[in-house]
Length: 238
Image (cartoon, rainbow, N blue to C red; front, side, top):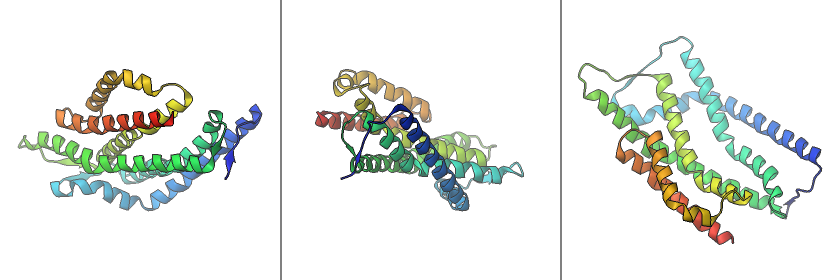
């Protein structure tokens, strides 16, 4: 079984950090280039939720399509590179807090994180985005002299923003796990401050969703479930 050792001189740690950062940047660049090659498919995928709403998309600048494809490619390059980035991060960080960290354990952490990340993207795409679009479209439909014409750039980045927020929400167990490993928080602290955490969830839900109670509840409920899952696994680690 391969183990990760943490007893290294300070400058070797810096060199290792530099090497891992370079690997992350190379991964992002390569995946961004690949994402650009499939940018038409990515745009078509993001437009799919509003196909039934008969919305026309406008491009107001000559360079808009090119800039949209480049921006989406970079965003997707970062998102799709997260498993590699996370692996490099954990391989560098966790040995400082545990005496015996195996590569298998780090891969398990990466796999679990990736699973929650995909669940977050799916939740944003199939749940949060349709509700959000329906809410904002209903405001326009109520006014007879307004047509639903969106700029492609604005729509796509709004979609990406919602999906990024949703995926970040589903990273809550992993974030709490890392904080627990580092010693910033523990199970007892989270349990004793459960009410404050729930209030924080409602504030975040109000900030990241359309201003209607249903959307906020739809975001807060999975956040609270993930929070309780995090507490459960923290308790099992003792």
